[in-house]
Image: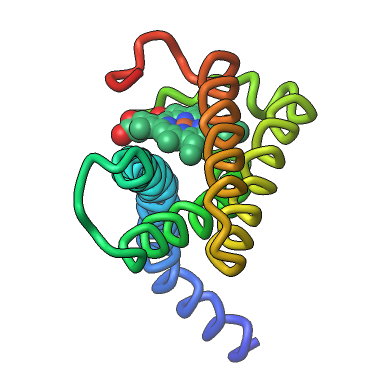
Length: 161
Ligand code: HEC
């Protein structure tokens, strides 16, 4: 009996604590979703910057040595290989232009993501092989994958087209 009542007291003392823990957990969960979306946009913006930088270098617009081409292509290639993992279930809310179709029609979405990831690997291989033609082809195919996926799965109202 004593045991029971002690548990009861503990229980009643713990109730508000449990409530607070649930509130904190909910806040953390909300923060997680927000940061997934923010992180996803950071990675996308980063790829856009590397893509523009690399395109400029390959067009010979600036006088930089090979290490710049290698650095931009490597960064772009590594990040492109992360794309399919940037859209975990539940990351469809908040300030996002990601369309719900991503999670409703994942086959097509993953097809574009995989195309981008394959070209990301090819970019790294092109750096390794020091092969400009291969790099240009991969870069073009990668840019196509970016565009195709945005057409299908990014909302029209997105701040950046
Ligand atoms: C498989 C689909 C897919 C691929 C491939 C893809 N993106 Fe995206 N991208 C998206 C979606 C969806 C969003 C919207 C994300 C959001 O708002 O949560 C987005 C957003 C962006 C944004 C806007 C970020 C912001 O701050 O709002 C940029 C820039 C971008 N992508 C660049 C790229 C580039 C460059 C590539 C190729 C190297 C690429 N994306 C490949 C689906 C894709």
